[in-house]
Image 1 (tube, rainbow, N blue to C red):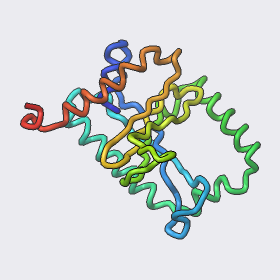
Image 2 (image 1 turned 90 degrees about the vertical axis):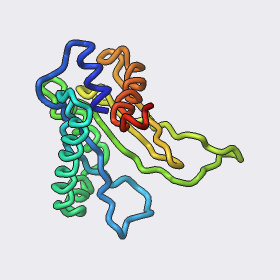
Image 3 (image 1 turned 135 degrees about the horizontal axis):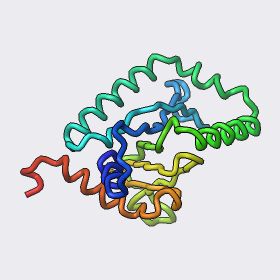
Length: 193
């Protein structure tokens, strides 16, 4: 996502000197809760190094930042992360979320975009007897965060879902091609020939 995002920012003459900050949803489900229903999600803030021109270095520093964020996140007890929202009534939580995101939209945002990786099944699924060939995720955007890139793995491949605010990113369709180009940049030169 950083390579495609960088290309979009460069094309629109909006490349910042600092990394963007991605909101990355993470599961806080404990081992005992594995396989149960309901959402148990927390979030991490991770730099997305769109300011780094070299694709290999961009991947390296992004990987390192994500590893460090995961380590910090692991240090927090999952129960603590769940307890923070468990006792807030859903209507109050929804209103508080809207207010928080609308306030963030009027100031420098904490996050610039959402980036998510959803591990999917690695075996074929069927719907009314037809094999499911791909699962393209559709996620949400909020005030101040007009881009969501979600990738879902399924049967050994990755399916990308890109959702954007058309007023903030009117040419969002360009991102999917640039994602492919960014991935190709990271393949060894021998594999490209």
